[in-house]
Length: 117
Image (cartoon, rainbow, N blue to C red):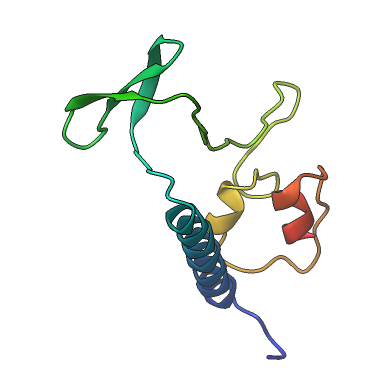
């Protein structure tokens, strides 16, 4: 392990881990014959989804008995906290820092908070 870890080192590791975990999930879905569709989705009825491709704007209908919908997340940003992007950052902003902080307090016990801690 390096003595002085740079923000570039952290970013490279994050990209590697995210790519690996994405591959694991995709492989599990493929192995279990689960079709994936990416876009903005809404239910047309109990067994039909409308999926709009975010890049091309094309809509397709998908019918099934069961759906798994992965919506993603955004950092929690309470109104009472002044996120300045420099000393008080959320889990997205931390990736844009110029250097690794010499110390840090992590608030939150979700997966991302635990990873940063």
